[in-house]
Length: 107
View 1: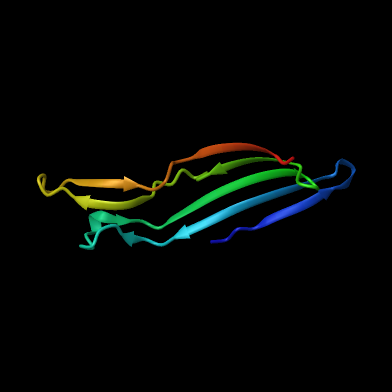
View 2: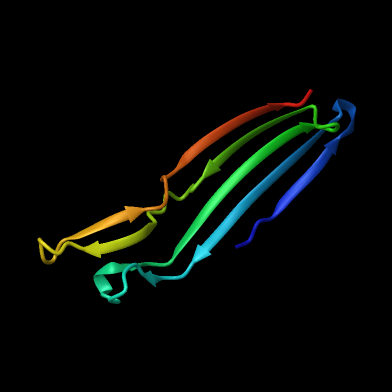
């Protein structure tokens, strides 16, 4: 994981702007105990980004973010179907690409 960020005080406005990115790498791995190559999750790199603007006293914070920008497909588990040989069921851990926005008020 690599999570760089940069913050800058904007003194005339009394706010702090922060920009950050996440680079989350995971090597390839088997998703079931039998090490079947059909159940191999290839290596993935997930990219996230966010921008945060906050009052210096933290009375309010606004943030916008993009998660899984590259829209990587990530499985947690893939298992064989005992009643249908050769078929598999998979469980995803990712939500695909999505965006968020938050406003926090402290009083």
